[in-house]
Length: 183
Image (spheres, rainbow, N blue to C red):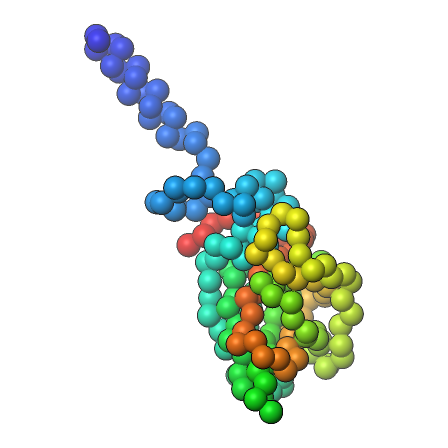
């Protein structure tokens, strides 16, 4: 192989490295999951599936008192929130977390299990759910998918007493631009 051919090969391989698309900095991309395939379509449920399956995960603990200042916060920041419930009356578990909507819009809440909960605004008024489905055809890691139309403000999600130790939640803003920088 002459010097010109080697130089062409080196430049070609270098250029190839710049055009291969990637999401995140995963060093171990051994196999695509259903969540990876779903996100390629850039759908809100694809995003919910991807982050429900792969995280990144943030562990938080619910507050026993919905009005308590110690209520953990969840966000729509491409993280999965692993919410640990606290002990309530009669051996049941549950609790509350807060969510701050920083823009008006349609927010999608993806859960890894069927849950009973209510959403309250800052005045303590219940917020009506627009829709709910038991799962999504995009993946098998979402067991409940709820949609709320929220205005800018802080909301409280209060989980009804149950036997569950906790729940995993992913929140997606349907109107938010897709920024996939997983750090």
